[in-house]
Length: 156
Length: 161
Image (cartoon, rainbow over all chains, first blue to last red; front, side):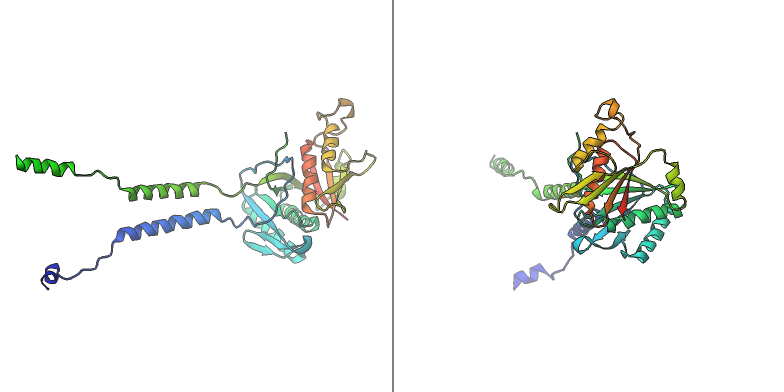
């Protein structure tokens, strides 16, 4: 009984230091995750010619058009800047308008075309046509297109 | 004397220790820093392709061309789905695969691997890769790669009607 009286009333205190530690770790974690996730890179099996004459992309503004793979070499649509356009005439017209807007904002824009190696050429060609059409509507003499491939063995 | 001896004993029993917790904190922070700074994704390579506007004057564009374009036909190999067959339209010796195509084009390019008398094409000679709409994209890119490897830079892709 005597020892209890000597201790006195218990005061609960919250230590701020570990909380700050944890909060900072969470901030760093989410910064790291946002760096790792790239919405322009849809997971697909890109062509990988070997020996490859492809090169590293130049810096500059870009619009990445992902040809979303469908069953048996078809495509279910085209994804650009988080927007999905249907793989039909209406979707292609909307894609032309979107690329035209991007070209008017940045005239040096590159249109990067990402397509699965198994997708049929007939589903990829409309993207090149859309890039060409958008460049013409934006008053540019030519469309600057880049075909995206997996890095393979470089040619000697 | 007794008191001073006791003090010496107390001092010598003091143990110097390293606080591991702070070191672990710093090591983890460094680890996270380098994880953030490193790009874990595999890089991607590109082929540059400039597509000129042909909307308004396709006939004029054809007449403006000083040289007849070389047309390369690409199609899936029916016997092996992972391979493609290529051929050159016109009176040219047959080339069966993209490697032979690259070798042929390089041999006949001005400044290429062949002899000067058989160098028929300049590096900016127009080349059209014509593929059927059901040809796999990988095969179109393989043919495109063969042409670029041979040193040509005026290449375009078209759908075979």
